[in-house]
Every structure is written in structure tokens, then in C-alpha cells.
Image: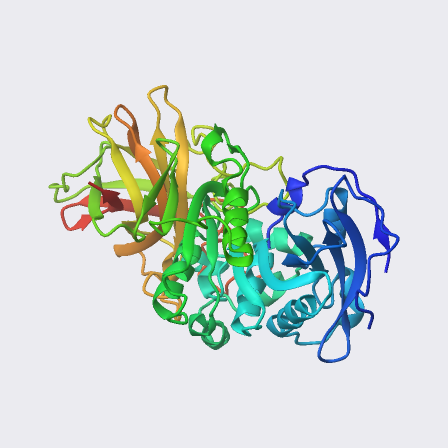
Length: 545
């Protein structure tokens, strides 16, 4: 065991990155940035192997509640500034996943990370510096492993804080709308979680996905309170919300009312940052960290109110203020439907024209670019992610159709799932439909709120492909997931409709052939969007009165 001296700084980058010796004493440790020492420890697993971990102690003479962080991204990142939560009231154990970094020698072919987490929790509780209370914290992969650990129900686990993560390994995590999340999956490969080849081998909702979804759907096994934190510009906010709703209805009855949900204005790798894309949300900065500390204070130390009622706290990106609500979506929510019209307008009036359509050509060699949004670039901070002005590179292209409301005469609060139904025909056997939802400011900025996609061959479901017949009009449903924003008086609502949004989504070659074939031949698709009486393309918003 070695003790190290660190300089005092708050290393927020680690927060944003996501997702057989025992410690016998602390003699000889040197102070680390004034209040915490670090030790290298080996945590024994039930199979005789060990996980490498760093132990951070505020004071070796006391017994501490402990926060466990399990990471595939190298525990050494934290050595630049210490544990990610700014509190002096906890010990921290940061462990490398089995098979990764310091735990490479513990590799096994099919690791059970939940059982490894169980062993870590119980090892911590057995140490003389531990008071027996353990919580878990982390984002993305560091959040998923918390659910897996809680599933095993270690006796000394008291509370968890999974961020931008859910427990279910579902198809649309990587194929929303049936299209590969190309930029995000490439980011995972860069961060040493290579999975692209495996994903490309299963591009439809096949037997493997169904087996994975069934085996990872385990809210009934959760018996610890969860503070679930998500971001509106995360690539799967709906999955985070679904995890919360599953837990409050299906987890151990003794903790169902203890779970809490916090949704902020954040991108996947930007939790707690003030600046998101081209906008700033000062009142949201640091909120996730404060909530996590309050959560641990309540469940591990028995102090403070924890997270008060109502149980759902969400950040309104329009008013730039926190709101609280009993359920998500709210019990008083309603649907607002806006229809697309030939003149480029968007209104609550359904189209009355018998024949009305707009041409939307798509050349896969020149796809419409991803400008911000829930791209999931990870730590590539020079990439555009989050709310960006869509006039820059998107709107104005010949392959992008734009539909806009009149300036609003009263505020409109969108709080819940958003979807679209786009009627389309094509001269190709397959193509895509992309929808971007924006808030148009009085100065003309068209700031992205949500973007989503649907592959035409998967328009019915993701289990079986049904190619298009040339010239036939089809309804293409597009699920834009959830958001929370008040569009104020004088602003306008806009949707941009196209057939590409790259590199967020893999660009469809329009060939109708095997999906993701290397060197596929590219074909221009002559697509048409309909906005007529029998084919009323529309946007469906969940709003609050």
C-alpha cells in the first residue's frame, strides 16, 4: 500500500467522462491537498482475483461512510484532483473494472460486474476505516454498473446516484429509430469500449437484442434508493426517465417512494457545466453535485432533508429555472398538435388541401451535418454538442424542409415526450426521416431543442424490415424523446425535416440492401413529404397548461 500527496483542485473532467492485499492501516500517509490521503489497494473478488483501486481518506483516525466509484476509464484520472464530489465527509474508493487498466490481470471472458460491485461494497464495509455505510456514484458506464451492483443487493449498500444511465441494455440505446448512433459509438471505441463491430452485426431488433433486454430488465431486484440524474441533451433522456418510472412502480416496495429524478439541461459528458452548446444555464451549474451530496448525507450519514418532495426535479431551459413535479410527465399534461403546411408554416390547424407536398432530395454523399444536439462526442469538447443555431449549416439547404409557427402570443411549456408523424414517399427502397425541433428567437436564431430519426424500412417496428415501394405514401413515426422547455411569448417553434443528420446518425446509402455494408453504393433519393388532408404530417408535443 502506498500513500500519495495531491494538489487541491476540483477535477470536473472526470465527472463529465461519463459512464490479495487489504488495507490494514494508514501509517505514514502524507496529507493530500489539505484534507485527504490516497492509498493504492487491491480488493479481493470471490474468484480469487483482485481489482485495483485508489482509496481516499479524509482522516485515518476516523471511521467514514464511503462512496464507491467503479470505472472502465482508469482510476488514475482522479489523481489529478482527487474525488469528484466536493465534500470532506466521506471516504472514496475508485476501482478499475475487471479487465481494465490496473485490474487487467483480473480479466475473465464474461465478467459479472454486479457481483464485482457486491464484493467491493462488502470489502469496504469490513475495513477499519469504514463505518459500514456505502453509496455509489458515477455517470454513463459508471452509472450502469451501479444498477448492476444494486441488483445483487449487497447488505451494506445504502444509496446510489447513477447519472445519464439506465439499467436496460435496449436496442434503441444504440439504434434510436433503427439507425446507428455513429458519433456516440465511435466515441465509445475511442475510449476503449470497443463495440461497433458487435453492434453492426445486429442492426435490427433480433433475438440477441431481445435476450439482452430481458436479462437486463431487473427493477424488481433494486432495493436501494436511487437518485437518477439525466440531461435533456443526453443521447437517451427517455431511457433515464423510463428507468425512474420503472423503479417507482416495480422496485422493492419498501423503496419505491424513495427514488428521485433530476433532469438538467446537460449533454452526456457535460453534467453540471454552466455552458451547454451556445447557451448558458447558470442556475443549473453544480446542481447535480449538490444533489448527490445531499442524497448521500441523508442516506449514509442520516443528516439533512435529502431530496425533498415532489420527487421529480427538472430544469426548464426556457425560463432557466428549476421546477418540481409529482410525476413525469405531469398528471395535468396534454397534447398539442402542430401541422406542417405547404407554405412552410406550422400551426394547430390541420391541412385542408386535397393535394399538397414538398420535395426533399437526399444525396448520401452530401448529408446534412449534425450541428449540436445529443451527439455524444464524449470529451471531444471542440465538437458541437447541445443547443446550437441550426441556421449554421442545416437550415437553408435544399435537402432540409423548414416549418415554423407564428410568434407565440403566450408562453408554451413543453414538458414530456415529443414525437412527429411524417408522411413520405421515395423512389428508393429505403431512406431515412430526420426531425429537428428548434426554438426560434426574435433575433432569428434557431436553437436546437431535440433531434431524432427513423429508418423507413423500420417504420412499423424494429424486428423486421419492410422496404418501400416507389411512389407509395407511408407514415413514418419519429420519436424525439423528452424535453423540458418553455417557449416564451414572441418566440416561434420550428421543425426541420430532412433525410440525414450526420455524424450523429449513420447516413443511409438508400440502396435497400444489407445494413451497414462496407463500400455500399450510394444512391440519391428523391423523397417527398406530404402535408395534405389525407396525409397530415404533424408534430406532437406534450405540454403543460
